[in-house]
Image (cartoon, rainbow, N blue to C red; front, side):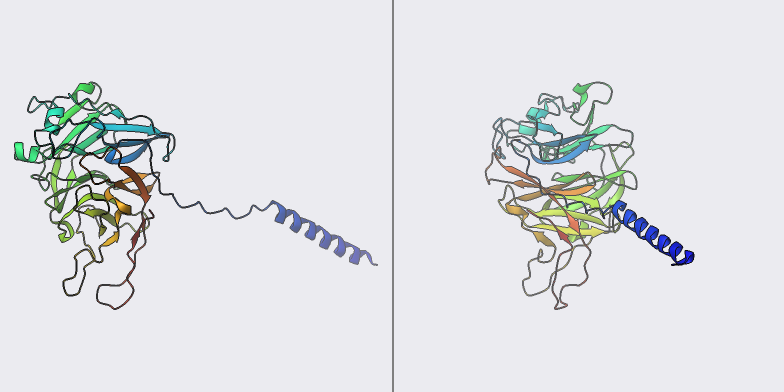
Length: 363
């Protein structure tokens, strides 16, 4: 064997060794993250609320019924509770009040216990917590009876001293406050609503009255409307339980809502989309003799409950669903947080092709 041949053999052996070493040290492709799971928080009397995260702590807020509140029946108002956990699937702490029931409304001088109970049991609902860019936490909620008693809208805002409260004037410094917002597109409204931060800056509320929806942008303090917005969103009627978020992959704004039905044990959930938070919003149409309006806009039967709003937690949009038991007192009603998936599709009513809604969730 010549010297040149021996050198070639040594080089080949070295290359084989290096190849083997490289193969053994190259990391295997990372496994994709599993899709978010549907969460069913247990053991909390919290309803028509939402979930959010601050630091490493998860929060759930909602209306409580355990003190004996009954819808449209003279009964005590139980207040808004908040529970915390280190994981979205719990275990959740015993709820504490965001503000005391005897908190005073500075405009009427009455307590919220009396305003929210009223002689008709009209209640207060839909606690919505969000953190402004300046770090301050704010609470919005609706008091339906104020639409009648004050001939204005039903909404209130409170400044809070943290993500779990306390909120309102009685909370004191640094941020405790109670305020009746000035609104325009949402003036006169009294139904379910969503408080929606905009990733591009600012925030808006989407409000309802009589089954129609309106949107209005808020000022920098998220305390009053600016008059920038729209009414009769997507031409919808007889809907409530609204929520919205901006899909990061497409830049599309997606709104969900439930067909109007108090404490129903199964309510269709529909959707609409828009290029901006205030619209224009469009919902899929339907064709056919006596076609139900929700034919293509409905994508879920509410998992045997009713959609309430959308919460963004760890970057994931979760559809909150109250699993109502169909009674005026809903203490034992369950709750679902179902991840929403938006995948744009093509097609239109009347094209004779299969229709698959672009929005989906798993019960």
